[in-house]
Image 1 (tube, rainbow, N blue to C red):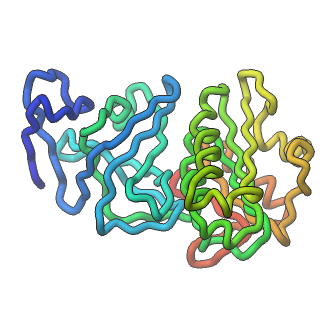
Image 2 (cartoon, rainbow, N blue to C red):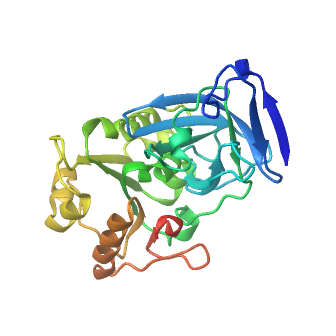
Length: 283
């Protein structure tokens, strides 16, 4: 383990209780220590941040890594989906703020220049390789569950494998949808993937509390057919459609119940199927 004493002007605001004193930073063996390059807060519950990317770090779009802060000899590490695509020169993350949370209580205070530690091995099932070939890819998400899809919709490979990519994002309030809205808009205008995404990437936001154009849980909108009617698309078909799911445990359980009844079967990296959920986030 490496222990560094950062001078106050080297920031690491998330670690310092007294900004006038040097801050001990603990870098465990076998992890990357990267610098925060950008932070954007959307609400009092959600924010995103970007960090430098280690030259040797490789991952598949949709995978997650373990990240933490170097603020103790045994730092708390949590699984975070990489929200940037595999070709990006930096790594992006989309995070919730949990009052009193062992990691997010401090993570939400990070500033540009602060240090993030990251384990070197990515993993996960929300990857194109875990699905059988299909025509339409549905990505159902709630809250910060949009993060892996922010990665996948910015990867040209996704559009090589599927004719249409339909991503839904459900939150309580309108402003909690801003990250997904901005990501989709930026993707459609991106010089690398914009051309392949145009006409093939479809976005459906909905809220459960604040009134917006589309109200209700996505599970309800699927069962009532409102999703299909609003988007003017055919209902889910296990023969040609593929599904990825990421969100709260209750949400993922409800979605699985729906798609299982429709004849979809769960896949994995070792045995591709017609739908996948991120099991690391299922209790």
